[in-house]
Image 1: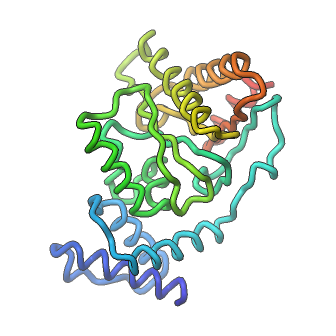
Image 2 (image 1 turned 90 degrees about the horizontal axis):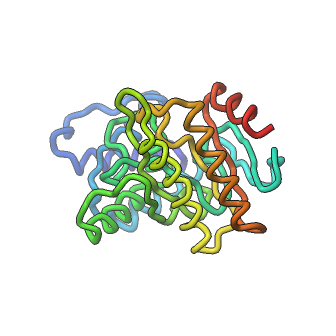
Length: 257
């Protein structure tokens, strides 16, 4: 089955699940089909899927990631002992775990093709991730508190695990509590990773972007918390600070020099 065949199969199956879209016309071009498929992944509720669907979805997503190019930790050079700085797409990073900046529902982003990291991670991991998150939240029976962390499989991503953490949302000036909660996110992820005997973790820029934490202040907290943790736990976790925007790369580069 070609990648086009897989994409069309998945679109048709997902449209069939949504009766309100029964008459929707599938775009003829690859870009339009890709955007439609991502949108359908994003809005799909956490329902079980058939074994055939999962096999075709997995083959499709793994091929998409292969085409984007996988970055391995061995390809990177540390900027400090035990710390790396890398600008790129975190869904293509092969390491023990990546960190997802989740929301309190912990089910991923339901906005079609939204630009947040939560959307990207759930899209390219596959529908299994939302199902696992839904099981965790059903057991928890309450929204995920800010500053804690949960771990899931990574499914079709090249990493082994995903660490999900909910950062503080900023309304107005950043408070002392906001700073502490953001530091808690980093420490919770590090502690969880160590409890699973992981060797390396890639952090995104938690709470920046949609949650409006100022980039430089967030980076300062991230670097300080990681460095403190590594001093307290020598010969432990290696950390990759993953950034997507040039402005964040420059901020982290200055802080880590």
